[in-house]
Image 1: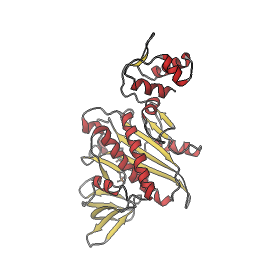
Image 2 (image 1 turned 30 degrees about the vertical axis):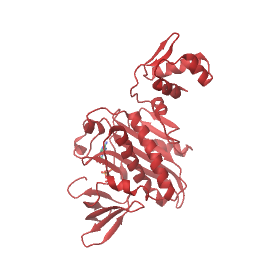
Image 3 (image 1 turned 90 degrees about the vertical axis):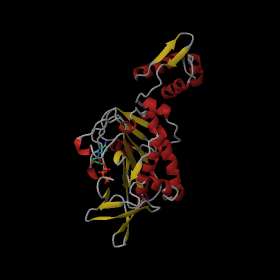
Image 4 (image 1 turned 45 degrees about the horizontal axis):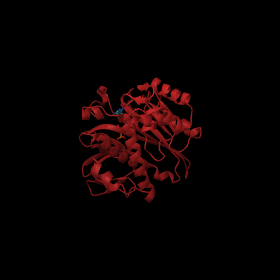
Length: 326
Ligand code: ATP
């Protein structure tokens, strides 16, 4: 009820009477008052005027679970939300919830991660108040070998969401990073728990640098944030809603064909590696070639100097530009 009241107050042009809220929720005036008090304690400035009702004074971004729930316009994703001021890693948190039986679409949003994760044990800087650090849970029916495509689906959806919210056009560095001007603005980490042929669950983790103004020296040359690119503040709650709505849409397109054929053109349009020289860094070998985009199942097509064409599977390798990160 609290999130719904917040939503109604956000959308209302004028005061909302206590009676309207009581009738709507079929509860007492005291129950409405209690919910309003809780919202005030979370930081929402709500004015209460006798004979007129309640009014939200400032309709701005307060980063809270209630704020996110009231803003989400998704069909199913994030309808069970766990908001945390601080956690080790939102992926770890989803894993713990998954082990306890949490359902498909459960979303964890953290304002700060103390042990944010990148791929293969690398770390992800996720300071307080400066990013969207979130993960959600999937319990799909498809085979484990299809799971890597979810990373590409997610990259495209996050780019859509960032574009809708800020007008910024992100490039995709195959398979899992979003870049602006050659610098990483978002990383995606997909993890899976499975047997040989059954997926128990998939965790999709998304880290978007929103308000970080200064990066540590190790990543200063390769990292950026939306606010550094835009020079104005970005509403994280709106960004989450936009990313998740686009994700549902892109995921439907993926499920319809069980591959990326409906998404390939859009993905490729954003792919920074396309028709460029890339360096593929594998476990046992590194090589350079020209990338020709992706296959319908998400592998990167790389043509070597001698004409051999390889299909590179994500997970095994990192791809870099020949002269730098992109
Ligand atoms: P790959 O191409 O294999 O994905 P990567 O270096 O991009 O390689 P990731 O696992 O995607 O690796 O991301 C982790 C790396 O990203 C870290 O090792 C660090 O270099 C960098 N990094 C960490 N935090 C951030 C951040 N908030 N923004 C941008 N880059 C970061």
